[in-house]
Image 1 (cartoon, rainbow, N blue to C red):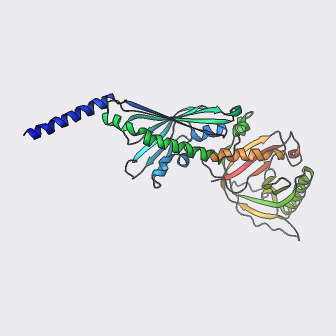
Image 2: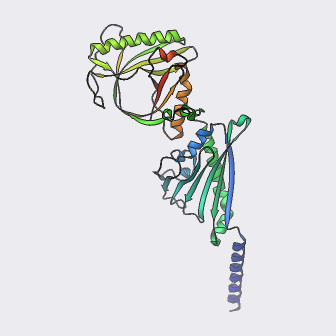
Image 3: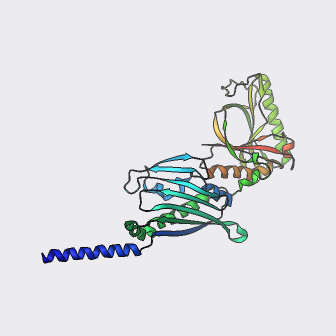
Length: 363
C-alpha cells in the first residue's frame, strides 16, 4: 500500500509540474525568416499572390509526392485557395488561403492543418533593398495561437525545428525558382494602357503560310527580305483562292548579334469562309524554288500582350516580359514566340510607329 501511495504522489507531482510548466509556456508562437532575390518586385509579388506555383516552392509538396492539390476560388489575391489531401500520417487534409494582399508590399495566408494550434497564419512582406533598391527582401512570418491548450503549448517548443525549418527551405526554393524567371517588369507594358497587359487567350486552329529567312541584322535588308517573302506568299494565296486574315506575323527563330533568323507567317482562309475554327486546307505550292510552306497550327492557349511606339528591334525585352508573366502564373511556354505587325511592314521599322501584339503559346 505504501508503495502505491508513493506512486500516486509521484504521478500527482508530475501532473502538477506539467500543469505549472504548461501555464508558464507561451500561449502563442511567432517565427520570422528572410531571403533576398534580385527579381523585380512585380514578379515576386505576383508569384506569392497566386497559388499556381505553390508546389514549386513550398516544401509541403515534398513531404508527400502523392499529395492531391486543388486550386479553388479566385485565380489570385484575396480568396485564392489551395486545398490538399494526403494519406501520410501528420499531413492529412488542409489548406492555404490568401486573406490579405497589398500590391508590392505583402501577401498573407490563413493556414489550416491537423497540427495543434488555432489561427495559424503566415505573411510574406516585401521590401526593396540593395544598391538602388534593385533587390527584394522577402520576410516570411508564421504565427499560431494555443490559448489554454497545454499540449499545444508544449508542441510549440518544437515549432522552430519543424515549421521554422520548412520556412527556411521554402524561402530558399522560392528564391531559386524566381531565378528562373526572366527579370523583366511586365507591369510596364500596361502603364499607359491597361489593355496592353498580358493575358491568356484561346487561339483557334489556323491555316498559315510561312517562309523562313536568315539575314544580316540590318533593318533595310530585313525589311526587303520580309517584303520579298510576302510576295511569294501572295502568289500562293492567289493560286489557291485564299485570302489573308489579319496582319503579317513574324516568328522569331534566333535573334543573334549578327544574324536574324525568322519566319514570315500569314494566316489564310478560303475566300468568304468566316467559320471561327478553321479546317485544314489542301494548299498547293507550285513552282520550282517556291519557299512557301503550308502549315496547320492547332488550337492552343497563348499569352498575348500589346506593345507599341517602337520598332521591331525593341521586341526582345517584350518577349521576355511576356514569358516572365506566364511563368509567374504557373504556365509553361512552348513552341516559338511570334508577333503580329499591326502597323504593317514599313511602319514596323519606324522607331516610333510600330504596333505589335506579342504572342507565346503556353500549356
